[in-house]
Image (cartoon, rainbow, N blue to C red):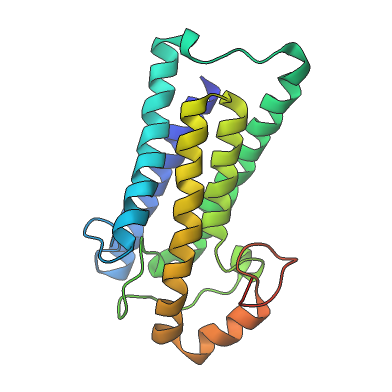
Length: 197
């Protein structure tokens, strides 16, 4: 029940902040609503992972025997997963707030806002994705059922793939400012530097 509440709280917060960013930017920011190129596949994987996890949590409440029970010796594993979920949601929401009017879903040239380099973005070029991946890793650890593992894997694959799609768009759109930022800030975490990682 707690993972379902946290999952839905994150999804609703994500949507609310996206609508807020759209108002601040004065334009639509959800380019996954009409994705082009490879982003069609990443959009599909993200939606499958996000919506599927929310729906699967509801199925788990209605049919609790679908989820296998963890042995007592692995109970700590589930609690570690819950910790990952909380940390991941905090990072993802915090980074999305820090982007403000620069927030967008997907990457389309000519639609990007100002480059954000402070806060979580000083530690990672993709802290929203880092947070989401951490959240969904925790969700898979807590529930530890095959369906949730697949749904979480979809989010991970989509995030890794989407970053590869977005980086060239950022370079072309933001030029030297982004290239300088990329040489100073790691793609994923603060201890791995350089744009190639």
